[in-house]
Amino acid sequence: MIPHFTLRTFRDGDEASLVRHANNPKVAKYLRNIFPNPYTYDDAVWWIDFNKGQKPPLSSWAICVDDCVVGCIGITIGQDIHACQAEIGYWLGEEYWGKGIASAALTEMTNYAFEQFPALQRLFAGVFDSNIASQKVLEKAGYLLESIQPKSIIKDGQLYDGYLYVKLR
Image 1 (tube, one colour):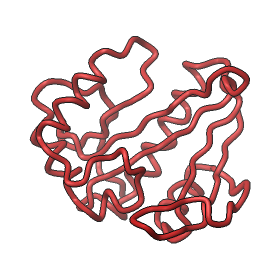
Image 2 (tube, helix red, strand yellow; image 1 turned 90 degrees about the horizontal axis):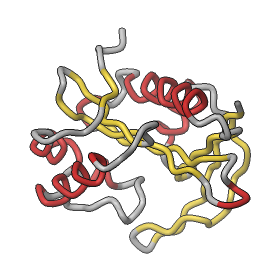
Image 3 (tube, one colour; image 1 turned 135 degrees about the vertical axis):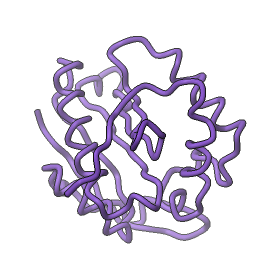
Image 4 (spheres, helix red, strand yellow; image 1 turned 90 degrees about the vertical axis):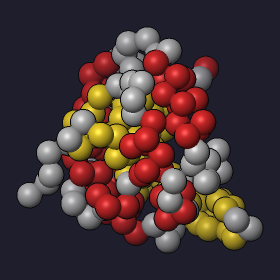
């Protein structure tokens, strides 16, 4: 059974929980370099303030268990000729891995994105070839592997193949 979770906006008071779950090299391992590692209290304050400035419909949500932030999920809508698509990304604190929360949150966010952003025709996620867990999360949420992009990711000086997963409206 999937533990009860909610998607909600970020708010003041989330800093400690955000740092507790984000400040983990295993969490940062497969995320973009823009994700701070180590993840500090100041990083949490910045992220919460940034998200408080969003106007509906929201593009980023806190993943919460017992009203504590344990992860994040969001979309980045394409610009110009790519405005019909958005990249979706997520992370979850290590103690919640393997419990079905990520797939359920991804399904919920996918439905929300297609409902709230009518111009979106496709959502996509890029995944490291060695991030098998995230590939399974995407597949459980109905995303299909569209392509494998050889040597398209570099992280900590190591090259990875990128797996591009897609879900169409």
